[in-house]
Amino acid sequence: MSTEKPTTEPVGTDEATTPATMSRGELQDKAIRGAMWTLLHVAVSLPLAFVVNIVIARVLGVVDYGRLAYLSTVLIIVAMTIDLGVGTGVVQFGSKAHAAGRFDEVKRILQAAQGYKMLVGIPAISVVVLLLVDVDPVLMAIALVFGVVVPCTFNGAGDALAIESKTAQNAQTAMVVNLFAQAMVVIAATTAGTADAIWAVRLVAGGIGALAYLYFVDRPYRRALLRPRLRRFPAGFWKFALPAGAAGLVEAFVSSRSEVLVLTWMDAAEAAGVFALAFGLSIHLFAPAQSLLGPLVPAISGLREVDVEAVGRALARTLRASATATAAVVAAASPAFAMLVPVLYGEEFADVPPVLIVLSVSGGLLVMAGPLKAFIMARLKGTWLLWMNLATLVVNVGLIVVLLPYLGVWAAVLGNLCGAVVLFTCLLVLEVRALQQVTRMIVAAVAPYLLGAAVSVVTWWSVSWLGWSPVPSAVLAGIVGLVLYVGLLWLTRTGLTTADVDAVGRSVPARLRRVAEPVLRLMAAARG
Image 1 (spheres, rainbow, N blue to C red):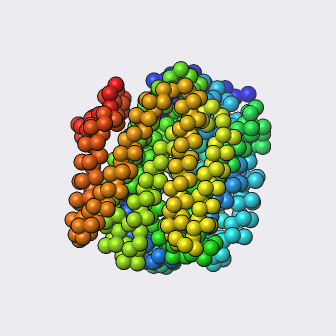
Image 2: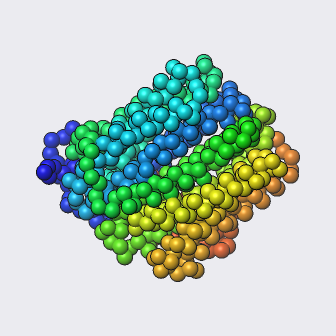
Image 3: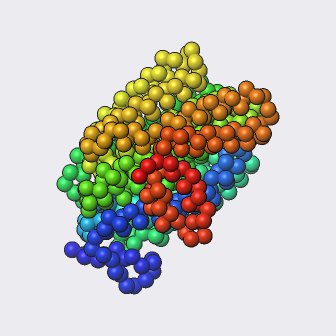
């Protein structure tokens, strides 16, 4: 059996030195560095994504924009269905083994996962896509190669980087891949001008991007990825992966524009387009906050392995950070962008602004739910996630089906919001009880989000009532929303603590620290 250990040197070096285990501090530092690099990636890619999205929406119009969302969502749902939780299990079991220094175990897990994806994933996903998607044969061939074969063969690199907590390298590569992908999409939109062509081009860019991530995977892990084997997973793997995978699949119906699927199947094409744009804008708005929280998932899993007593404190800090960051977006960015939608995307999307306001509130809850799910998954309680997501799905889809004939797109909006409330509440109550946290402290941690949601609705309604032109209205809404939100934080003594600011500030590059720390301290109104 090989005992070669992953290197901590840059790829291409011959020497390999690595500690046997990662300490609590190392896990925290890796998570924070990854979050900062991911935030930089978002800062670079987000403006570009907005511009490209405007081009796509203006070229396609409401109905075809909804079709593009439908095609994209179908492939995501199908891939998650066939995955059966393997990806989730690989990150959880691999992160624990890597943090504890069991490197051979990590390699065996990666090889087994790649073997499953190539033997089961490729043929199964291909068959389902052929049955559900109706596009030109040439575009279908492109979709199968770059949307199925290439990802199933090489996207294990993403799991390996997550296991190693290499979110910094992940973000660096993503910046380059994103520029390439967006350029290809613009070319497709301005030349072919169809939803099907744009969908196919996105798949090509994604497939090529999957290859780039392999470079940053440590050599032994990369060899394992490129040598898939049909071998057993660790004991307890499937017991966790199957319910966790089912939970993730059900969650996807709640959090990844799956409402577009229901609206399309119920012949509400225009409503699907309106919902798709509003949902997409809310995703873009929350990208900075999400970038700060994403690297916490593997770090939390490893933290439970090396210092279980610190998990309770980590929960409180994570809730404060996620609530404060997402609330700032909801309070200021959401009403500001809602004012700009008609002028940017055209009058055909005039129904989007109020939908965007509500979906931003819902989207913020789902962003905050992400770290809570990481805490539950670190305890390998995938079955609990499954039941909570099933309850959320029943609420979401049930409201859409019942209310669609009467409310149109608002049936999907209300379904999404109610589902998000149910999911976040269940996750919060379950984890607070499991870690025996003080209820008052947890309520204080999530209070900033309630303030931000209220500010968003009041700001949008008030500024809309003035009847100003879009650009001045957007500027006013952004300023009013931010000032009201920060003022309420200090009035209620909630938000970040000085310790939270110091922890994040230590990881910020020196050139950015002078700018970042004053912004963070502006929201550091909580005691502690």
